[in-house]
Length: 74
Image (cartoon, rainbow, N blue to C red; front, side):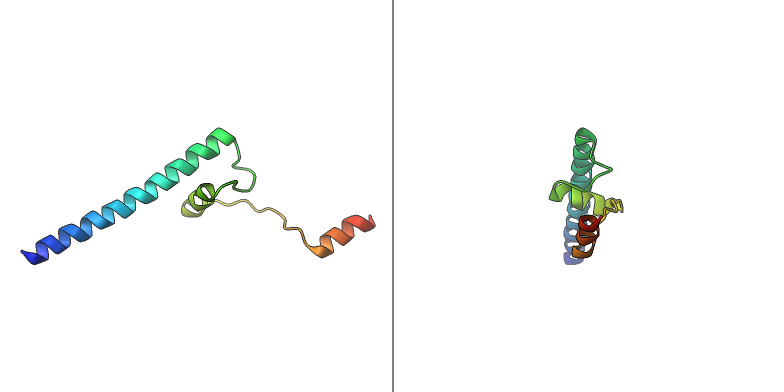
């Protein structure tokens, strides 16, 4: 009987974690669609986590001191 209760508790916890992941992803997708920001960097933590969970990311060039110097010389 104790094993059955333990399995039930473990199953409910796993279901809650799974539901939480789905909720975060759906919130991130909805925000991305409303803001039309899928082609730019994520603007909030929820969007960043949603993209990470979906495996979606945007390659954006990072500003470096060398890149700034090249732009200044040209």
